Structure formats: structure tokens, C-alpha cells
Image (cartoon, rainbow, N blue to C red):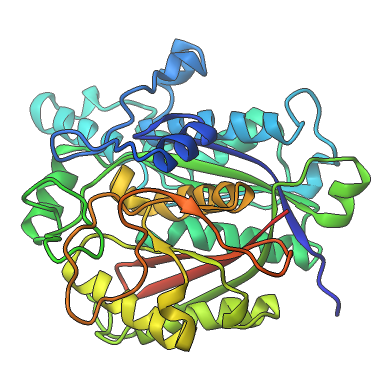
Length: 401
């Protein structure tokens, strides 16, 4: 069976760097950082800029972020006024780590403080993890496969990979995919802090010797994927191609990766195999790069294993240095940042990397962005990594148009 190629025709994002996918790309590339006082909120986002006050009240913040990012992605794809395909051939798969946790916490507080009658009748549809995909389906009349993926910090990449497979195998002609997360709540803060995952210094320094934990952020990233032949037939502007996808499990520990990064390495290798490429084709890596001791070292080991002799020559940077860790939304936002970096042939920086650590000697793009060095005239290729609690590993292989 010959699989269809799958292209990206629209992207949208809301992140701590601002509203819009290009805002994310331009500000990160320019060295801006959206972390403030130890967190990374979407401070420029006002839901009523994107929906009515009534619609905003009927959506958890995570869903509000997904709607705004989705509207941008569909508009760029040329879908704002009319869908290009039968709605039954267009699906929506979004990822999340903890769904509508803000709604859950608020309604639990009301239940505890004033009784059951004060709980919102909308609590369940607001807090369910599939609320984002349902909202985009309703908003844009998407009637194909519609559901959500929940796999902690790998959810966004898993959602994109799932959408890729559906188009490749003919289950859909196009998919709206990505992820959203709004975890800046009292319970989330306390829970991650109690497990020692949050940076006590409030600084995200992926791969730096001083790293001491991740900085939690919120946001959403949505992509429009289409079968390549159909997108070209309708004259769509193509941003890039999803060449491959790899997904593996560590079966090792609920929160810690294997020290040698073998699970992540297998995900990268599976993605390259799926793309029909080898390590010599990789021009850039958008790392999971959480700024935690275990993850950054394990990912470095994994990259050395997969890239071999070229490991120190391939630029590796972490979007989390600029926007913190968006949990389940991270993979989708980072895939968008990656495809725009490939489009402009640029490697964005790992902000805050200054002090090396023995054995962690890759090119982490310190200081400032720089051009990707291309020698053979082909479109550049990147790997985008996402690793989640539970031992979930996902890698996307992306290629510029």
C-alpha cells in the first residue's frame, strides 16, 4: 500500500510569547522570553478577542486557547469561509495532559464551600479532556474522526502523529490537530512543586549545568494537515510536510526516563525510518529540553545514539527556554515553531544556556539564532521530540516546503 504524503497548510498558536504562530516564531528567534515570575502565562490572550463573552464562559481556558489557535490555523489554510472538502472527510484530534483542570478545581471549591447546587451544570463538558476537539468540530463543522489524545507531555505530538496516520490510510482527507493546555492553577502548581519538578529559581535553562526543573506554562498550537495531492490540486500554500512519526514506551518509571534515553532514541529512529530517511538527513532538532536534570541528559544521550558521528554538528534547541513547559500542548506548539524555523532556514536559540556540563556537548544554539547550514539544496529536515510522564515518547520528522 502506497501511503499518501501529508502536508501542513495552516498553523495557529497562542503562547507566552503572544498570540499567533508568527509571533511565537519571530519572538523566539529574536531571543525573547515569555517567562515572568517563574511561570509562563499567555498574558496577551483575551478570549473575547476570539469569541463572544457567552462562548468564553462556556469554555474552559484550555478550550479557549484551542479555539483561538484553531481559528488562526484554518484561516491560513484558506478554510475560514468554506471547507475545501466534504465535512465528513475532515476530522479533529487534539492532545492535552490534564484537560479542563481549572474548571475542575473551581467547581470542587464550590462543592466544598457552598454545596452541590452551586456546581455548574456545564462543569462536565467544560472540564472533559475532549472539550477542545469537540469545540473545534462544532465551530467549524468537522464531522470526520473527532477525539482527543491524553499522554502527558507527549500528547501534542501523539495527536499530530495520529492525524497523520488517518490521512495516510484514507480515513480522512484532512485533519485539524494539535493540543492545548491551561495548567496554571493552584492544584497543578502545588502538585508539580511537591514532586520536585518545578524550577525553584523560576528559570528555564535547558541543557545548562544550572538547570533545576521546568517552568510551567500554558498555550495551544493547532495545525491543518491535508493529503498532499488534494492540497496541491486546490492550490493551497504548503508550509511543510510531516515526513515521519515515531512513538515508543519506556516501561521503566512513571516520571523518570531511562538514563541512556533509549526510549526516546527508539522514537527518533522509528520516525526517521517512517520518513525513509537516515541520520544524515537531519538538519535541526527541536528538543523536548525541559530544563530538568534527568530529561536533558537522557535526551542528549539519545541524540548521540541516533545521530552518531553527526551528533555535535546538528543544532539542537529547546522552545521551552522561551515559553516554559506547556505540558500536553508542548509538542504541538514546538512542531509549529519547528516548521516555521525550517521555512526560514534558521535555528532558534536555547535561551539561558551558558554553562556546559560534562558529557552534554551538543550544539545547543546558545546566545542567538543562526542560519541553518544547507549544502545540497534540498528542503531542510528536523526532528521534534516530546517525552511524557508514563514513559511516553513521540517524535515527528518534519520537512520544509
